[in-house]
Amino acid sequence: MSFEESLQDVSIRERQLHAHILRSADYLKKADRQLKRQVSTLYLAIALLILFQGLFALREAVQIPLSCTALIAVTSILAIVNCLLMIRTKNGLRELNEAWLKPEEKTALDSLRAQRNELLTRLPRSREASTENAELN
Image (cartoon, rainbow, N blue to C red; front, side, top):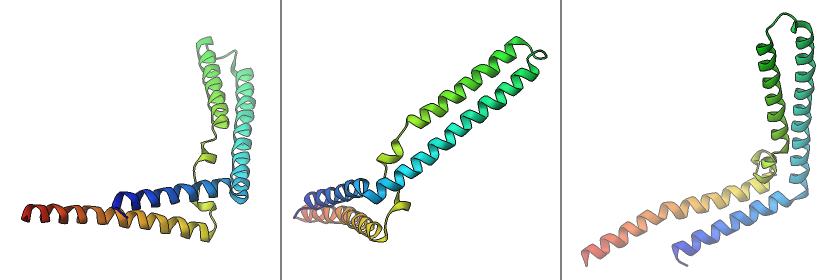
């Protein structure tokens, strides 16, 4: 098997392992729980922002200039939009979180990475050797 085929084989097996782990029930359950916790935290942040912003605006509306009040309102709206955009983002489910992996899954993944790294470190030596042999001939 050539170097390219070996490297491609290891890469395919690593992608298959990633896909298998991402589809597993345990991983999906952990990811769902983590996402729900993060979304709840963001909703709490929005609620607290609206509460304190409203209290501040009611108390200080007569003392601060209109331009400052408008700036505070725009900043609050942007903060709320930011939280809502973060809620909609689900990239955490598409990425492999290695902290959630079972020991055997982590071992398999580390083994595939070690194989790939070994192949990549062997490549320059084998190509250098073939280049030196070609120069000698």
